[in-house]
Image 1 (tube, rainbow, N blue to C red):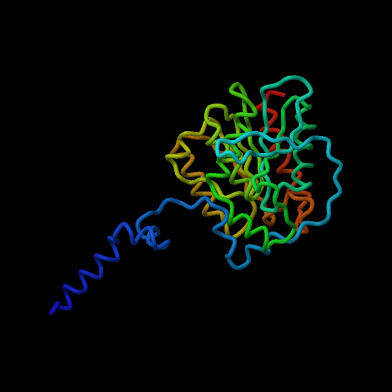
Image 2 (tube, rainbow, N blue to C red):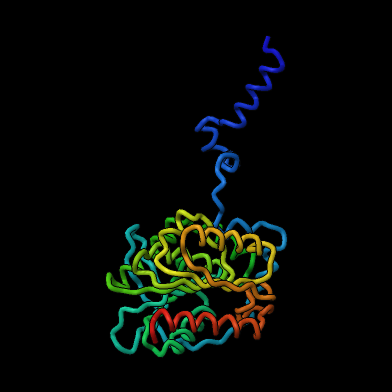
Length: 287
């Protein structure tokens, strides 16, 4: 018969040091032994109140000036994006990343705003990270965001990098889901990256990953529960540990405040944030 004290030791041992196959089969086991910050926006989809930050977009009229283009990816599935070519040949590129709704007309229009304000001197491409899926329903948007796989998203970024070319200098900008991918794109594009603008996206907080950044970062955050002040301060501390520069502001506005099609759009905060973003990008592209 096993004495109670030994039984307790055995039970504690199995909990603290699970077998490898138990870790693979139990999605919560990894939480016990791994404390790497989670930078996946999809973690919030089922959180109470998160969908309320994303009311269905208001109808938006848009007359496109750019064109949809396709490019190969190494997984064989190909990628797409909404492209506005520079008026003269240029190796400068701005990668634009969508919110969780998909590559909708609002994001295409915002890509055009950046293009015009950069004087038409920079190639601007808004990447389709959902492979054609677009929705105005918050629940469906959450399901799409949860269903997309990180390796596929990375393939799209790498495919766009090849489209831009080996001599391209790339800056990145995105909102929400795309705010997170603006930073991840900066990491993926390596020494071709020259900047990243994050609008209220979940940041990478792993200092070892951030050490590979080739640029500083501009963060334009909202006052909210999920991408909270504590999360942003942790990001700032990790950037400092990594030896990288971060400039950021937490606006007294709701998540999604800079989307004109969002009922929670804040014109004043959006104007200030955009001035910070376009000033930053003009400096990076020297235009």
